Length: 291
Image (cartoon, rainbow, N blue to C red; front, side):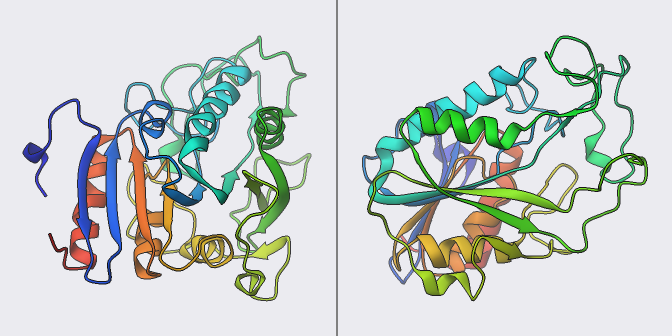
């Protein structure tokens, strides 16, 4: 589909159907707003990795991750999942991948990051200056702050899955702490009874050894895609065949590509229209749309 097929203020960017009966939809806008417009009970599984706190600048107004306070970041995610909740089926689940951030408080801009070129951020980051209320050099604990806030909103936290990357890039400038080699993937349920296929764990329980993708449709200047194998695991465990997967921070589109290949419908929400264009083009290329 073309950009001009949609009204300027319409969140629907593009959509398509497959001969198998599944569909895909890309929505452009703020996830807090767009999620609230999703049909009640239309989503079986949410799989997402929101922008981490002060790690990247995606160069779009209103982006998550650059909030001036920790509470502001946690609050934005909290509001997003509150907006998603009505759209999630009663037996639906959420897989939330979040990385952490250190509070440097050095008082000067972060500058370049030799590990990730796209981590260069303009000016002084909130984690570079004073006022966050933590001792200098503290690990902020962002993932657990978000998880506990969601518990307060009535989400059931069923598991804190540890995603281990044996080939994680070294942190040579970190000489007085261990290098980070894992991230959290929180499993939330909306209700006490929910869809869960243990066979999808593929022999691993709450520690998943999954290596990053070296090549991915989602990779680009500003993308930070999680690996396809991680999404495959989440879908196999938490989304029934023929179900619908939502990624409210779809970024480069990995969640949608994998869902499509695994016979699930997908919905992706993305604030950056350039990312929407890339995902839409790839989705149309991956399969011949009908209708």
